[in-house]
Amino acid sequence: MKEVCIIGLGYIGLPTAAMFATHGVKVKGVDVKQEICDTINGGQIHIEEPYLADLVKQSVLKGMICCSTKVESTEAYIIAVPTPITSDKKADLSYVVSAGEKVAKVLQKGDLVILESTVSPRCTIDVLRPVLEKSGLIAGEDFYLAHCPERVLPGQIIYELEHNNRVIGGINDESAEKAKDLYSTFVKGEIYVTDTITAELCKLMENTYRDVNIALANELAKICEKLGCNAWDVIKYANKHPRVNLHTPGPGVGGHCLAVDPWFIVEATEGIAQIIDLSRKTNDSMPSYVAEKISALVPEKAKIVILGCTYKPDVDDMRESPIMELVHHIKDQYMVQIVDPFIEEFDKNIYEVSNDADLIILGVHHKKFKDVSFEVLAKIMKKPVLLDTRNFFNKEKVEKFGFAYHLIGCAR
Ligand SMILES: NC(=O)c1ccc[n+]([C@@H]2O[C@H](COP(=O)([O-])OP(=O)(O)OC[C@H]3O[C@@H](n4cnc5c(N)ncnc54)[C@H](O)[C@@H]3O)[C@@H](O)[C@H]2O)c1
Image (cartoon, rainbow, N blue to C red):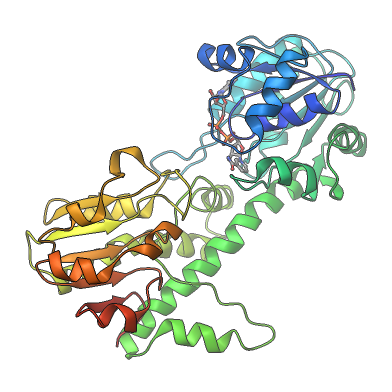
């Protein structure tokens, strides 16, 4: 294929565009935001991702990427628009529908449409297909339709786009093979072909698997606090078993994948996905569980400093951050300060902020926090108390400076 249209030029769409463009496939990029199109057409990028800026710049200079807000006719369309959840935990597929409507207007016989967004089970055939068939063409007969979910990790997207294995689900075998041919332009990993529902569930279950396992660890943390032992020791010793891999507890689960995707399965299966549902609720309960622990450690109006507020360590992404949920729970009761070197608003000097503090909470285990001096903190805090939600700091080292050290999942 010589040309592809990529709809949605965010964290997934733009790197994918850059990969096609650098492998000889011309990209017509489409985004609803004019400023994003202008930025890319000017050879710049609007997101942070290593190596991406150079790839985009070179591709634009060579005329291999050109963006606009309008979908124009071509041979293949890849839809990479957002698929968030609503406040009542339902999949918001409106972006997929809107992108599909634009494609339907220009779709022609023999074209290929690929849905790359993470979607609810059956979305490709039950939601996108009818939208595309408004063109008067029939999926599987007149045009090819496939789902090709994305597995990349932000921070290493360029490497993973090329090297990850992929699963492609086609509405029929020809659609899956057509999509496989297209991705083979740059993918060096294995490409497995299947049907669309299998591919959709595959993507959702990858994140659900992790969410459920973290929920198990969070439940273990609560169990151990109740029973008077240390969950981290239980995990350490249980994982000496050759077939056990318990995950680790924490203040909750955030991000745009683990905290979102399992809800798609719950919504689509009407009461069947009970373990998945309970796991989501267990992980969502952790910020209030941490809030309860705080109330046992310090009185109302105490000054609390929270280290880290992103959804995971060493990134600048706060989407669905459980720490911000914790802040929401405690902000009216305490004086809360946040320190996070990855977020401009909270990039503060920890020692200035901690003056007279009653409690420090380690919320996110950014590597940069390893250098924190508890010797200095012990001198400037009103009372040196530390609540570690990630087992990040060394208990003995911290206690050496007079700190009272509390660890989530540990009764001792
Ligand atoms: N970011 C990740 O690490 C990651 C990983 C795996 C899967 N995914 C999935 O990939 C999909 C895209 O995620 P993302 O992180 O790239 O989102 P994003 O928000 O970074 O980018 C989406 C882009 O689509 C544009 N857009 C929205 N509606 C549009 C429309 N109708 N027509 C054209 N453009 C439109 C937005 O303006 C935005 O620029 C989601 O389903 C997400 O769950 C993301």
